[in-house]
Length: 196
Image (cartoon, rainbow, N blue to C red; front, side, top):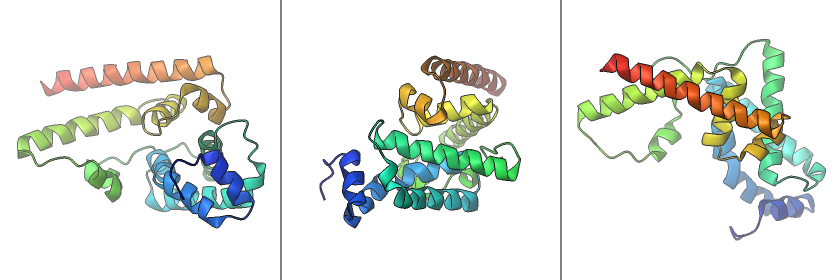
């Protein structure tokens, strides 16, 4: 099946019984959805469970896709709702990142896909420290800003798509992203000042 076929066409084909269409959608979004959950809950087991729940939901409710938004927006809306349900069940605030080394806080496939060339140990250590500082900065953001930042920067969603997914206005979403970026810049400036 060609990659030029739109997501929307694939979900329609799947609804009509074409299982290859579902496989194509799954291969397009499986990593992105998994990493969305992993960055939010910082637990491989929980991320696996939520990831599986989303795809089971897609299988069961393919007929509910109306085409009023893109498939990607619909998919992330389902993922967002699964995450909200998880936090309600657990009655706890999200743990976005695990403290510790960057090696421990990132799934293996994400580190391998970075394709970072070998460097001298000092440069690698400095890059790792900057990455940890950025992860710490992201984890210190308020929940709403953190989610908008991750959806925008890591998932590549537009502000309008994020507003739809999170049931917020465009302006509110835009403000949350702006505040998140501002806070991260301040956090990194303080971190770099301490390092120097």
